Amino acid sequence: MRSLRLLAKGGWWFACLALAAEPGGWQSLFDGKSLDGWAVTKFFDPGQVEVKDGQIILHAGNSLTGVHRPAAPFRTNYEVELEAMRLKGRDFFCGLTFPVGTNCCTFVVGGWGGHLVGVSSLEGLDASMNETGRNFPFQTRRWYRIRVRVTPKRLECWIDKEKFVDLIVTGRRIGMRPGDIESSQPFGIASYETTAALRNIRVRPLPVTEER
Image 1 (cartoon, rainbow, N blue to C red):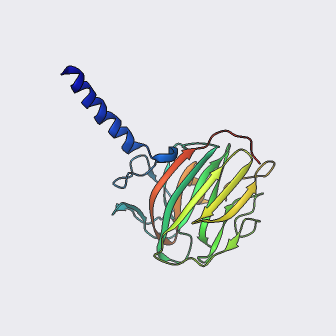
Image 2: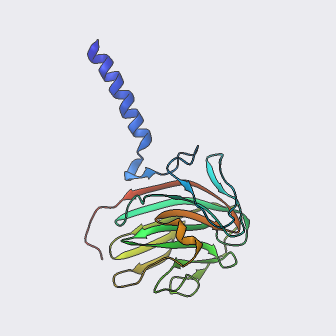
Image 3: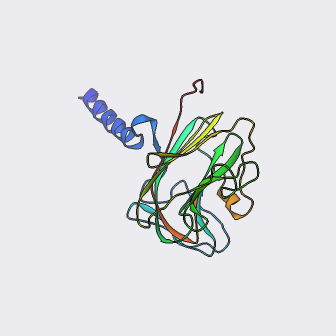
């Protein structure tokens, strides 16, 4: 009987682990109920941040609104993904800041009037001026899946199934755009004068392998 009770307790414990860990090594960074593990970023005159219906809602402020994690999950050899949606506004609804080795940068989704995608900054140039910048016709109230992969030699970014950034970072100067967005470091998500919804935020480590 004692062994059966221990087995039952062990089964409950393993069930809890199964809920905490996802297939493929993914680790959830948002429980859908609270900002546990996150901090509201202290931007200048931000909008309200709330958790509602399993989403983080970043309400439009007079500049940036966002959340960040005080410590980065990883520095290299990792992937992060989330779903983001513009609810209202005409600028970026997802500025995902993340580490690339010892530095950080931001993958901007829907900036500069609502359509620009790119990495800020590269060689001191923001997404509107460097080689990663391109235009895309984003729709309001549509979910987009955003994925970033960081390895010691390469930075890759996808929106849905389309790859927007494929950058060799060896010997390149990766950094943050100067200004308020620097407060998103080392790992954060922000919107600019735009109300955005975020969900399904997760991260996973990548095996250390020889890169192409």
